[in-house]
Image 1: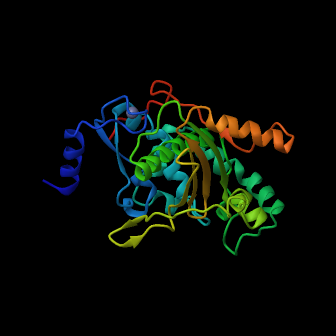
Image 2: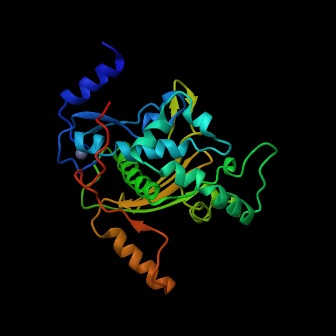
Image 3: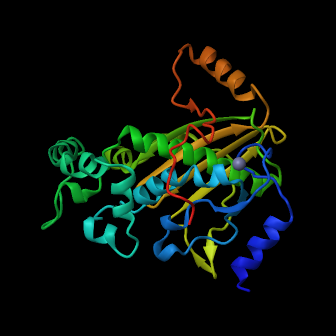
Amino acid sequence: MGEAKQRKNKLLDAQVPCIFCGGNAIATTEEHCPPRALFRDKQWPEGYVFPACHPCNGGSSNDDLMVAFLAKLQPGANAETLNKGSGLMRMVHRQFPGLLQKMMESSAVEARAQARRLGMRPAPGQTYQELGIVNVTDAMDECVAAFAAKLSKAVYYQQTSRIFPVDGSIMFQWFTNAQRIEHGRIALLDGLAGLAAMSPPKQRAGKDLKDQFDYLYSQGENGELHVLQVVFGEVFGFVTIFSPVPGRLEAMEDRLKARAGRDDSPFRFLGDRTATEQNPGPPEA
Ligand SMILES: [Zn+2]
């Protein structure tokens, strides 16, 4: 029996709970988080496999697909590099009809306008779109948010050996490389630069995968507050702040708003989408 199969059987025999829906369901599958497709040659980092129930695993396959696709949009990516090997483009096209057109074709004019606004010029032989400025759509936003919630729960489980409770809360904000290009930095990450954080390994067979997927993790207030700062290469990233204590973040946000004397926050709370509300993706491979 192969190593992967043995590991899977061991996991399933143990009757462990799914870590993505509060531990209420018994895991029947193992979930790679981040998805394997995100990594070059599907070489995903060791240790990023988690017990999941079928609805949590299968229900997020469209989110995973989108996130994997976005991660491959490195500056200079073109249809050829995206197509290479994975069939990822075909799958994205099938699951999100019109998305590519919205992002690429119809954004030729937008890409030019955006590049000009950012003071960018393509290199000789490169198009404006190849500058890799991602045109964000609602579908992307939704998928990245769902994925951010999942990765937060996965890292929480890794770091605390506990399952994130259903009544815990997660705040989220994401950014694309356009913000980095425009300002030379990501203001959101700058704001967190003073936070004591650790950078757990993301490796396969001793090879570092941080150029594709990297994050910093912080924990405070006796395990009541957790912060994750995630980047996917040069393309996009997000920050989540999460707490297993019901109402903890809501109270924190209220205090911050009161102190700042304003009512808006760059973060938004991620609601738990139930399995039935999620996109019914293709059956799990
Ligand atoms: Zn589940």
